[in-house]
Picture 1: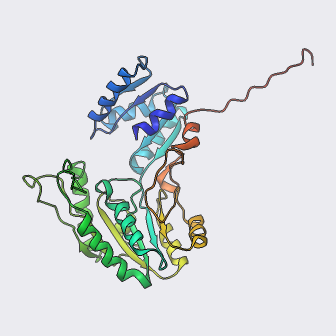
Picture 2 (picture 1 turned 60 degrees about the vertical axis):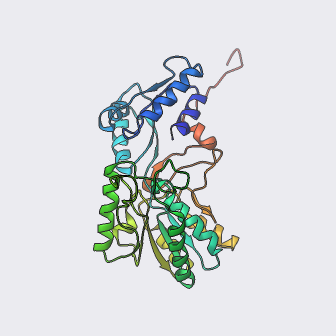
Length: 330
């Protein structure tokens, strides 16, 4: 994420202060050493480590800072907006999501299952665009569910992240681990059906790491918290729908609007549904595709502005109109 911001900001002639997440302070310092080796002048790229409530707040409210680009939670983004208002800073916010993945009955089932698994389980589910709500049409619901369960069992090997055969490593912090386990309890209390996972994984090292079994809930409804709230982990809910209109309504029944995916072999339907889904990005027959040439960002409470592509350059520049009178006299 640092590169997504650093590249266009520098290309547009800005000096930059990078404040990484307090959970991962070392990798950005390694990048800083590379920046020095590359010959950047002192002061062009600056690193400030610290807690968001202190270091982040100081940057967001400082009147000499003209622009804030933030990736993180929606709650934190709202605080940043308030602090940035002190001098009406330009802001780009890439925040939370509860992205839907819609599988129509004419979809290539094998393709849909493969991408649905990647869309939620990749990177331990710690992706803002994770397609964590899977909506499947009635006619193929049972087949999809069985195939998805098999895909999780066969592919999602939990283990040491330094081992090549590992698909899923530990969660980033104990707080995130605890959050996931708390949502397992929420799902059970809401009478959703726990199909698989929902437990700590103890089969790595001394069994004390922040490992979670890939978790799948079914029999969920849009009113449930596990359907509406971002968990940020290997945690997915699967619901069924009857008609195209149902699918669109269920997909849009969220305060978020970051990513979305849909699977169908009918290209006309794909574009018709994509147009009606309230999200900054729609993937057709894939999930979580990204390209540096294509704008990335969300709507609703998933953010403001865009990164990557030409839009990513616009975020770090401002338009100035200059009028020149070429006549010597009026």
